[in-house]
Image (cartoon, rainbow, N blue to C red; front, side, top):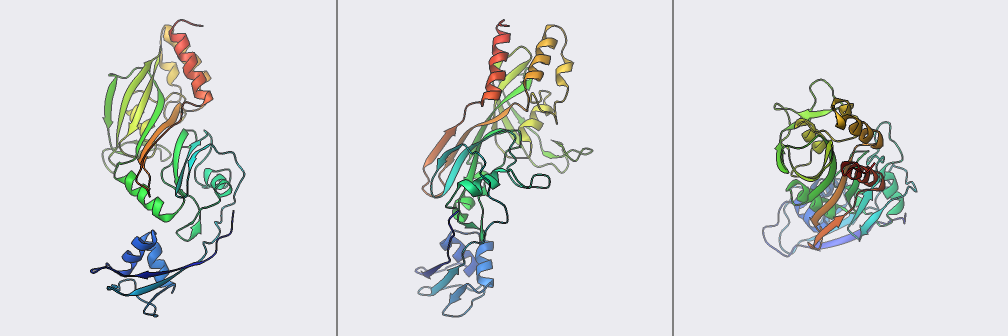
Amino acid sequence: MEKQSETRREIVVDGDDAPRLDVFLAEQLGVSRSRAAQLIESGEVRLHGAVPRKRDRPVRGDRIEVRLPAPTPSPLKPEALPLDILYQDADMLVLNKAAGMVVHPAPGHASGTLVNALLHHVGDLSGIGGVLRPGIVHRLDRDTSGLILVAKHDAAHRRLASDLKERRIRRSYLAAAWGHLAADEQRVEGPIGRHPTDRKRMAVVEEGGRPAATRFRRLERWKGADLVRAELETGRTHQIRVHLLHIGHPVVGDATYAGGRERGFAGPARQWAAELARRTARQFLHATELRFRHPISGVDLKFEAPLPDDLAAVASWARGDAAGIA
């Protein structure tokens, strides 16, 4: 990755009623307010040649000098891992994450993550928060494949994070759900929080849960399962998996929420369900579509990723068996 040097900016206040300095600089520099405050407090900002306070209010004609130190290298190690980057420009990128890849380093996953790979593949990251690192806008579970959005600098990250919070980013998934949904289309609403007895799982919990809603639409009806399209209205941890479990139709292959579900079938569907479970080596969940506004230009963008080969093979078998093909 190319080494970045410090930059200097001079900003002339050309309007009245400017906000306090940290807010003003955040807007002018395209960084977070906390990053702007950090620059002021570390002496990188001069107002009339003197070090200001972050609560000072500049007035028309004031000249503000800012030194932006070179971003410090990330403590994380860049790794030459394969990435399927679908789109990239100076502000952001969209990639198709493979199943099995953890997004962020964490205990037990210090390397081999999406962030490690991005640090190797993306050569023009700017210093988000003063450190060279990619800005992950939203996450996918390790065993969920599909589209993920990454910001390259503070301004893009802030705008995309705001759009995500305000539900202006539309995310659609494909999932195989055990059994058959009650209707071709349904909306599931239920607050999600930590499971009251198993802290590794999430659940619909009335007390302490965060509001969550998901829309489901059946695309295909198989012998003992449905292929559904899920659209997130909110973005809680494990949301699709938990909401499908909540209505009695957990995701096929989901070891955390649907372990052994295939054994609950009887009659002719029992053997079919056992074979579906055998063929599905990981949770059948794939982020298939992203729709959002470009964080800088404002242009509407849409990206799609079809089912990866492993899930496509499962779906092909399920359709063939349902049609009487061995």
